[in-house]
Length: 310
Ligand SMILES: [Zn+2]
Figure 1 (cartoon, rainbow, N blue to C red):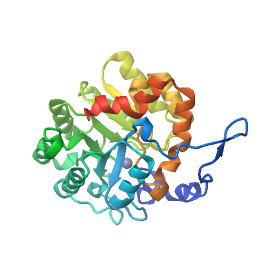
Figure 2: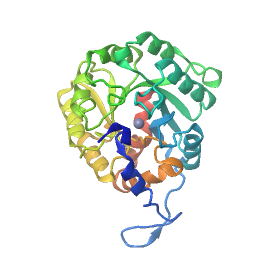
Figure 3: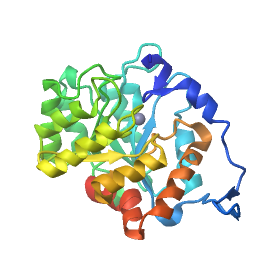
Figure 4: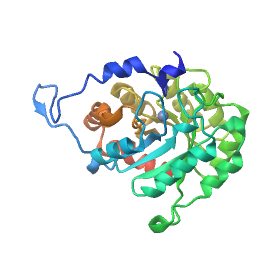
């Protein structure tokens, strides 16, 4: 699969197909074929979406207006946002340097401090650790004065052409360690972003919480789940799983395998456009139906609160 055909590894064709499977507004059927009300507003769950983007990606609407509209319509409590303009996909993304891309994230977070926090998108092979440091020092100002604007660091091995455990990544993970912030990695089916590669990087920095976005995009998720299981058993890394573009059964399996304290809700907002969160109705319903209240709260809110200190 060519990267130019996908965002976060998501095939355009599949996306086009799935947009047709939109439920009728306000209605659905449960197993007894009785009509149930879908949750169209999630405000009461205080959901934190740990995977959102701004920036330009050819063929998709990642506009800030669409993201904010999606967050407000669904009643998302907070989203962690990174700028995909920092990705290096010729003809697809803008390939901005870390300063320009993260500056825009900073401005947006400052404009919407109640709704957003930033994830600092880094390009490890370029070694601009001083730029990363400066951004991490920035505070919100105003009401939330002492709170940082950026609460984690974002790595995309596929879109920035490095392997997750490359030595160039180490100074950045060391900075995460120093600043007590998590690292989030695009985790996929390519060698560069394979769960095992991220696990190898995380083992070198065992105190840094490392989140495997997508639990291994375009995979059956087993390798990602097994890596987290191993890390817990061996105590040699601090790994977590994230739910974007995962089917509900796999997420439930992940929770059974690694526990509700190791899985966080994220959606890759707003890759599915103006009805982005409708793509996650099924997952939220399945989590609510199958988990205890405490476990559900862990996944959608508490874990993010603790991990990113927001
Ligand atoms: Zn993403």
